[in-house]
Image 1 (cartoon, rainbow, N blue to C red):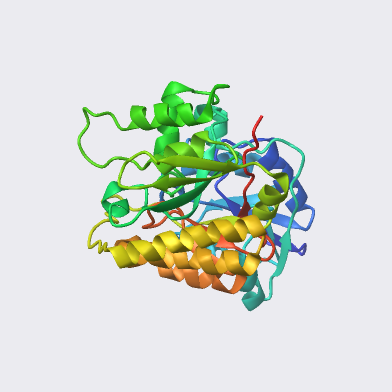
Image 2: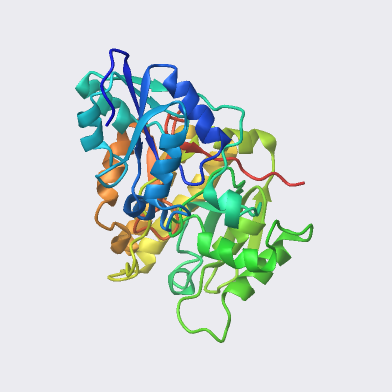
Length: 383
C-alpha cells in the first residue's frame, strides 16, 4: 500500500465489475472525506454472493479502480462473504468507512462502531449505475416475481392434500438479483428466450400460460416449475391464484389499486443472503399432510385479507405463519447459513421468509419502514 499521510483515511469496498460512471461518481464523493482506499471483492466472493462469475477478473477490476484518480490505493479483499474486507480494514485502519445507498447494512455499521470508525452512507447519485448484466447480457425489462404467501401450494403433490391460494407480485427489474435466489430467475431466463427485451402487450394470463408451457417442456423429465413463477412474472400487480390438485390454478385474482400496492411497497423489502448451493435439494425429507397444508392455506388466506385491509400487524403474523408452514413441510429449506441470516435481520423486521423454494437466496421482510441496506421493491403497474 502507499505511504500513509496525515489526511483522514477512507475505506470503501465493492466489486466494481464493468466500471462505469456511477462507480466513479461514488469514488469521487467518498474521496471527499480523505485519502481513499478501495477493497475489491474477489472473483470467488462475487460468485458466492451473486451466483455467477464476474465479467471482469479480480485483477482487472483492481487495476481499473486503482487507475481512478480519486483512489489512493486498491487491493483485492482476502476474505469471503459480505464482510470479505475485514483483514484489509484492519490493515488500513481507516478513519471513515463509506457505503452507497445499496451497500450499507447494520453489520457494517456495527463493525465500524466496534472499531471506532466513522460510518457514512451516501445517497443515490444521478449518474448511470449500470450492473454488468444490464450492460452486457440483461438489457431486458422483464419483471421478477416475489412470492408473499402460500409457496408450494402450486405443486399438485401439495394441493392434493388441501386447496388454497398462492400470493405473488410482479416487480420491476430495479435491481440485479442473484441467480438461484428465489426470484424466479430460471423462469425469467426462460422468458428471455421468447421475449428478450420485454413482455408483449397481450393478455397477461395467456402470456403466463405460454411461459409455463415453454419452461416445462413435456419432453424433459424431472421437476415441473410451479405456475406461480410464470404468473408472478407475467401478471402485473398483486395476484393470488387458487390451486386444487392441478398444475395450473383454477382462478387468478389481481389487485391494481394504488393505495394497496403503495402500502405493500412501503412495508416489504428484500435482503440478499447467498445463492442456493449446487446440489441442494429442498424437497429432501419433505413431510406433507392435510394438517400442514391447511396451516399453509389458512395463513395465505389471512395474509391476503390483511393486505386488503392494510393491517400491518395481521399481515406480519400471517406472513410469518405462511413461512413456518412451508418449513414444516420442507425442512430442507433451512440450509446451513440461513438461520444466521434470519438472526441478523430479526431485530429490524416484523416477519421474514425466504423467497421461492428456499435453501438460500433472498429474504423478504415485513417492516414498519424500509431499513437502510435492504432492497425496496417496486410492484409493476398495469399499463
